[in-house]
Image 1 (tube, one colour):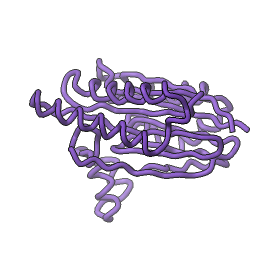
Image 2 (cartoon, rainbow, N blue to C red):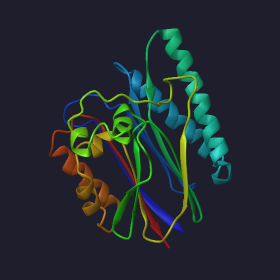
Image 3 (tube, rainbow, N blue to C red):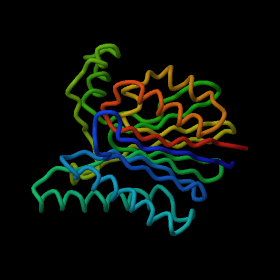
Length: 235
């Protein structure tokens, strides 16, 4: 398989500072989004630290990217951020959503509520599951999908830098020609309905998809930072 990606990150209409960060390296088949959290500039310290670690890994070549090396470097970043939080008496952290591909094999890894979607045969599938109190309430049947839209006090249950005991979730699958992989921060999916995202993913090029998604977000409230990575799978 071959692929091409396109990405964008925007502060949105309300926030003046962007604590999101993304990574894309088509040659090595590695793409990611990190959504930082924390007061002032603490959140972007976390997200940028993660992205820098991924870049350092990617410089070693595609053969270095596997589930073990990726997990190891993210665990190292977590340990570093937890230590800094203790030293500076602060709380900073970041979500992480990573996709890496090798020929026809694809692996997703995530912690937090940045999402990974697969668009295949005109169907949009959410591959990741949010690590949040909101998602737990939905899973337990205490909130419906409609009630969840009005839920105001969502808290992450996993994030890099938040706890020394960090766990990731993983998903592996085979790629198919014409697949599209969408990685995004919550600034996207909290503004745009799933059906609207699916409709835009019908566009033929990665750049058109990303530009249209961002434009639609910014036409609305866009209270949060918005980050999007779109990977277009070719034969």
